[in-house]
Image 1: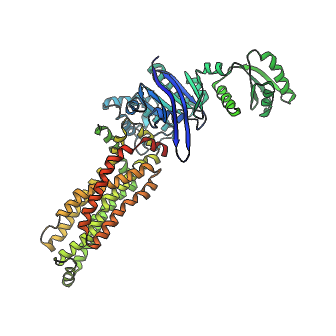
Image 2 (image 1 turned 90 degrees about the vertical axis):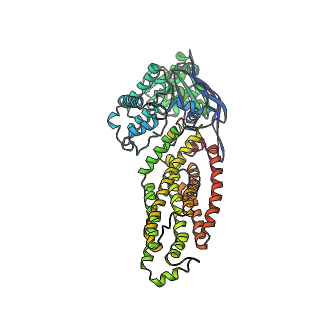
Image 3 (image 1 turned 30 degrees about the horizontal axis):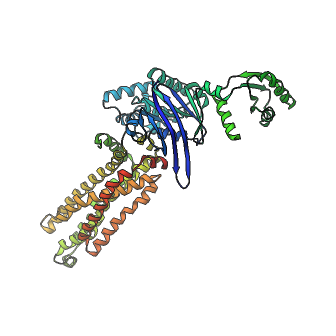
Length: 318
Length: 258
């Protein structure tokens, strides 16, 4: 598979009154037609990485290549082939949607008929045909987000950077957008880099996910690989009829040298392989003795959310 | 190699946006009207109409070697009209260029603009042109209007067309572009480093020191000499700016300040 994005020991330091290391020596590569999700808390370095890859920021050390072009010296070539959806919609509010799209498309496409065709197709796809002559300032937040996505896609870029793509969208629109992102990968061979807090989104869409914190990649792989790598264990889900105090599962987990947490009326424990039969009775007994009525005990698959929370918890304990 | 066709798209977009910006439009209409119509009519034409023969004889003492209405016109031209006319290119370019980057940051569109496949030099030049073109066009239109007003109203007194003369042509064709460039470079630069238009305008107001200089020079009777000196100094500063600015301009600075 052809590598589209390659990052090698990338470092980004913001030099102000104090120096802040935003990205601390990360390396990864993304193949063509793949969806890569970058997960991490605020300030982890996700947006900085995307900004370096889209040539908005210069790397302090290391290098990165997009479609074979270095971010250090081939910025225009990179910008010609990428589309970026950022947290700000980036459209001119006093201009109509059509004027905005014409303006942005004009830097990539010469032919007016091509621009018009592409615009009509995308406006139709995102149900905005009837708003094309409206000023962007009159659109709702969700519609602006959709309009911004059209702006990102108008020049048919090979690589897409999507920063929180479904933020501000209603659930139906978010589901439709996720379908469209998958369509872009499957049918149009786009390489898509997503920054998200939305773990369900990352799980649903990603071929590869990386979890970043404090500028460093903590884990990377497909959601299945991450689970296997991180949890050589089973997940046990216990449901009660009442809320389980936060400290109780932690206390039990500490005694057994495992991880456990409370999630309202549920508790979740991560058990080492082969230990399920030995530890379940002890956990259930401890909860019952703690006054927690048990409704159901079930073994569960790990989600990307579990992986993320587990990593964050380990990092916090470290 | 600069791609003018590409960078001009940003310039045109900015010019269209500025036309819709009430604050900028107001400056572009009120200021020229004040300095090209109101001030000449109120300070030269109207008083001349009201002057008696004795007043005109007295006015002849204002400029040695000249008499009556001509002396009155030359005196007021040098001490008021010319220094105040300097305000036109300075204020118009200031109001537009202080909004150039700060406005993009304020409206949260800077990132979209920086993502365009333009080089830093092209992007910088696009912003400079978006201020320079309207600045020069409006100033020259004002210059022509002022020439017509002065000539029509003063011909009956002088018996010849006072404008254009050599110093007025120098003022329009040499000093005005130099002043416009100076104001734009200072203001684009401040706008580039500011977070919003308001703070950019507060800092950018520094260019009006040039106007103060002209005003003082006018009253001291050294306006012609001062015009040449200021043209030379600002011309050198502009050349330095033209050489340095595109090289120092960086997208990163805007992103970090946004």
